[in-house]
Image (tube, rainbow over all chains, first blue to last red; front, top):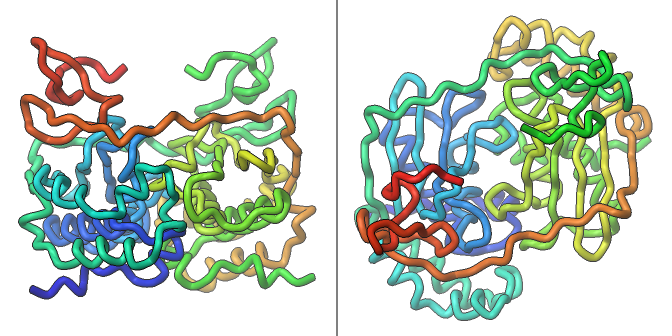
Length: 202
Length: 202
């Protein structure tokens, strides 16, 4: 089995900030999804990822691997969590359709036995865990088959339409800073930004 | 003026997917914020960025530069938009406090005159714009002073407490996939994931 193409480049670890097994798992998931949909890494704004992760739980690092592999980055507004707390993501291309990848529970269970998690559960940050302990689990992940790691589900009915963009902007009449039009609010007959408006966000 | 340290590494452009002026602007903003707060690039989970950008408007690419410079990545759940539609971000470290950087309107106006935006407003994606046009605006950005680009505001009262994390997870009794505890719902007396529950998300 040739898993070399699923090993993230060095700069991927530099971007992520530490070595852990989840960034590489997300990287592999992203690579496989591109392959499945028959597309290249996204340069601009035509491909979207909806990870089912949330907050207040571990293993979100997968999403950095997904950003790195697919080019569906947060800065390009191409990745958005669903807050379901699940180890899965749906990948959607406007012309090629959608596919969902999830981690198999058996794989998650097997991974849970590694010493890496004993450290994490004690609250020790990934960059502080001994390198040998981190490498043990990362190397094990590299050796697993795609079939053992991932459940793959085509999502033929999945649809997503990104919000229509506009370059229009207005200066807030109170703070003088620019605001993009869709976020401008009116107060005392003048355009203001949301913080100056004092209005609730929605 | 030595602006070399504000030029993103090659891998930053590879991560981002295209060359544009906004990724480098966010990179510089992030570098300056780290310097201001006296901290290093974040390896793990102790530093947070709240960009005031939203969706359906341009120039969000700044956030990729911020992720790259600071290590406050989406995958580590360290960056979260406020959806104000403003070209600004607040940087917060639990021990060092907070600072807000925003783009000065005069800088945004000056930048708007470049041919790059004529292409963007016609709907041409950054990777399709002639390299000379892209390089013109990027090089101009590199030559500007920090003072001309950014307004800097200390935010001594800014507070943020990340949600308490838990490793606990449960299998959804319907789909069999793992769900982190805070997202588990109950249906017919059994634990289920949000999609299987049929309940609305909030």
